[in-house]
Amino acid sequence: MPDLAAMFAQLAQDPYPLYDMLRSKNRVLWMDDGERWLVTGHQEALEILRHDRFSSDRTRWDNYQPPTGYDRGAGMFTMDPPDHTRLRSLVQRAFTARVVERLRPRVEELVDGLLTEAEARGEIDLMADFAGPLPAIVLAELLGIPAEGQESFREWATTMIAAIDPVSHSVSAERAELGRQADTQLSGYLGEIIEKRRAAPREDLISALVAAEETGDRLTSDELLDMCILLTVAGLETTVNLIGNGTNALLDHPHQLDRLRAEPGLITSAVEELARFDAPIQLSGRVPLEDVEIGGQTLRKGQMVGIVLGAANRDERAFADPHRLDLGRTPNNHLAFGRGIHFCLGAPLARVEGEIAISALVRRFPALRRAGDPQRRNNPHVRGFVSLPVALG
Ligand code: HEM
Image (tube, rainbow, N blue to C red; front, side, top):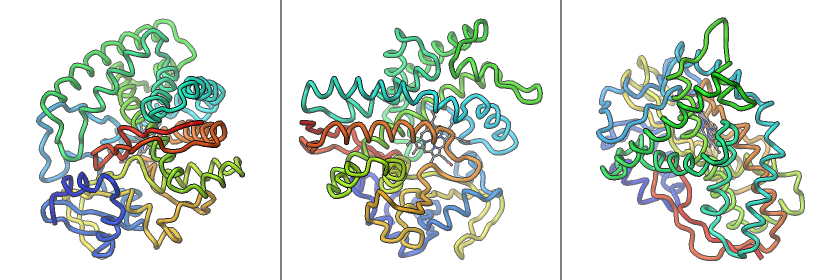
């Protein structure tokens, strides 16, 4: 088997035939070159994500090498209970479904504004002009970043995210250095806001995080900063790619696009199906804390287990006709937002943004179509587009 990252990079256009091939060999497959297991079966992935003997802490991997370039720890993402439980429950006190629902009218307004600007131009790059800006503005406003700081916030966050590569460690030294600088600037800026909100709270997520308390426990200033950075890293690129991959899938399936236009009420199940069909996060990882048998294989303590969410989402044992896009698919037990104790904390926000963005795009532009070749991002972990040209009128 070739090197895992190289294999995925080659197949950035369409990894799904490869996933099928791997799954047909074994749903839990040992990759000699990659020195890891690859799990492509839905049931097997689910079992691991819910299992309490699998760690999210990558340093538990026997072959763990600290990244040589820029490394921004992933906070809660890579923590296990009880540390994970403590942080997660504190954040959940602040980042509630109510907070997200309150954002709905504002997201509608932002989508409207971006699409009005786009309409005036006729042709746009969906990534640069719509899918990219929306989640960044929403997250900045949610955190409580003042309007004048939002452009810098987005620039620093984008540069920092571009330098993070937890899978293949293939980021150039130059990009890693830019990432480190952006991290320093963003951390300094967020740190100042945290201190300001501590002194004078407002109606924003940073103030709510400052105040979040459980049985006398609170987030420290360092934890708070790490959490804001984690929300930024976890929440931007992913939502951008949900909107980009989702729109691309609709353009590839005109009958489904027409169906959504005819039945706008389908949008909730449509977003779930678009997340399943071309998941923004393709790969997650766990390390067994003891030998565990899954899918007839013994996963040994300290081995790396790659959970291919994108493959589990196309498993014929879990989804009827898995390669068909069906916006009304029910049930739809996809793993695009993970499962178990690390289930995506931002899923309600991503869903609200995805629903509003995609339904407005489809509703406002009946003639929506491609206006050039889309360019895929060459990343096996985060699946999305660098550019997706579309014509609106
Ligand atoms: C379509 C958009 C999104 C997708 C596909 C996505 C996907 C995921 C997945 C697969 C995980 C689990 C990773 C694992 O188990 O190893 C996760 C966790 C997480 N996500 Fe998301 N995410 C999205 C949007 C967001 C947003 C908007 C935010 C916040 C603003 C967010 C914050 C988080 C956090 C904090 C975690 C870690 C939770 C924990 O460790 O307990 N995500 N996400």
